[in-house]
Image (cartoon, rainbow, N blue to C red; front, top):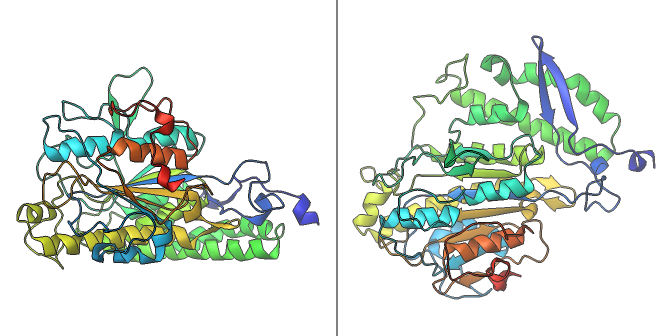
Length: 439
């Protein structure tokens, strides 16, 4: 009875000292932070909703899209890696983008990410993740966090910063501000803990965890058995993740700085995606942010996938019309997306998995064969924290633009879209512009 009356605030942290410097660690959502029903925070707020924008360049193969619409569709070969999540997966087919005379990659890239249909190669408005961050993450430690998996470049030179996914507007400042993503998992991991003066201290797991031990002990005495299990499991995963990063990068990094190691194999995307997925999950568990953008690969991507073709990059293969190789690359990218869904799906929060509280919005700018202005891929996964939002639907967009998909994402997250700017003149009522099939 005592423990059900006493509550912890959602933002409770544990603290410790390392060589005179404070380190902190946010906690996952515990039973002691919830109401008696386990479906809301003790202070009355809803369990947080989250959003992940996942962009992958150079698009998907022509065999990517299912042939049947509605909820009876079958996974295609490139989608097999997402089989475990089909019930939480929505695929949007037949999305079209108006041709405004720009490079075809650019035209679709800008409308997919910001609802812009510009006549110059730049975003007209902040990217969708930044609009959402203003609505659901403005009070968090980080309004949003930007991560990057591949260091591929835009092989066509269509955008000024192909290493940037997110753009925000700042009141009183003209133009949009780019938010460069973090490509080094160790540097991204550092954001969970805050400033530690020396990377060797930060990554020395025993020193770090010992520093937190005393405060952890006090916390353990105040919580129930199920919360003790969650805390033990959480600290163990943090500990293991720190060791993985340490083992992976200690030989290639400057030990006195958090930097991108120059000698990391550019093609080891599996490991980087796995680590960035774990980092995203931990940031959500600790409520450090509610919005993450992941730049998997640049538009018109120059990424080479050696297991498919050791000599030609993704974009080049689309121009060669190599259907089998593009299909294989689509499968690899979906496997990486599956790593993110698995990480979010394995983490529990109250009576829910974090994936149930998250909307993962995955987009690209192309479908093979190259330079079509139709069939631009959009994938939505997760529950968005909205019981009315249905998964497992293959939507026929019937030549609608990406604006309708973005409005669907906003409705799923219960965000009023009235002040979201976009360039689709066919969508005059933002409150009814979403795809009704998933509500």
